[in-house]
Length: 378
Image 1 (tube, rainbow, N blue to C red):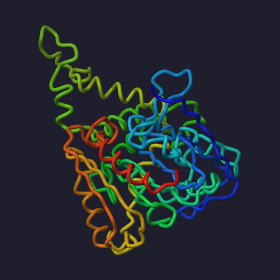
Image 2 (image 1 turned 30 degrees about the vertical axis):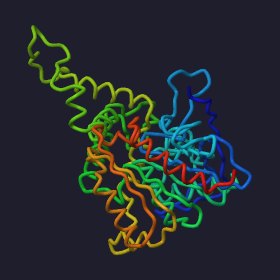
Image 3 (image 1 turned 60 degrees about the horizontal axis):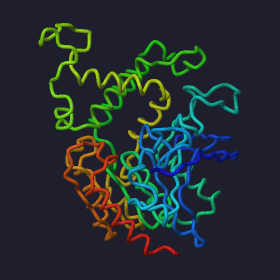
């Protein structure tokens, strides 16, 4: 049974300088905490979220069924990241649509909703904002920073931006940058949104509409990349949704196959809760992340600044963030003589495997955090 989680917010009046040269002030960050911070304040674990997740990492909300956090199978009392031993913090990134200041909020400089005028944010900007929150919480050094996918990029960036403020980095199903193919998928999804007639250049709030058609297509594209071919074939194959006399309907526009029905359902659901400008911001942050860029393309030189110990996990059928990308990070760390553990899990689920209940995966993370627990004060 999941525990009860309580969302909180922290307001920051002072301006946060951003990588783009812009800044943002009078913003708030939504966050949740689980477990207790010990007297030595050395048992804190920061969990960074992926594209469409939030600060609601674990537990459930009082009076709400099916409201478990997105990593509830990983984090909680007695789980791989045991909240009986660790103080876990989940933070919603700036620009998101789940409580932290984002495009749907009011710009204090104009009195108008930000919309498309919300400044572009990067992974590095998110890490700086998270560090400010930790300052407010009185946490000087983290036991670990952990994340999957885009969250893993944030964990990696933490080791470079604040190498002395964390002892361990747990990077799951992630990469040191996006491949051209990944950037291409993101761009197709963004074009689906910005070409929706209801987008209005990103100021659709003024018109009382939502670019749902674009959001649906963006989600459908993304969802295809999160699943493996094996899982799609196993779940749906070539099954028809409404076969006429056991055969095809011979329609070019109606839903014919079960996989089409599933993707449309996922797209419809996503368009009801996700913000279009947020989607553009977060996918662009993914595109921009590339710590090796400032070091002549050398990831080894980029990671020379890291002081943390690392656990990296990848999944065999994850073609969006393939194991080879995790091995690049491992190799760069070894070149710097950093301590790193690596697990490549043979799992059929594609990129989504980092959210699922593979017992080998959960056991690897549990064993690693068992060792971290030996370092913290009782």
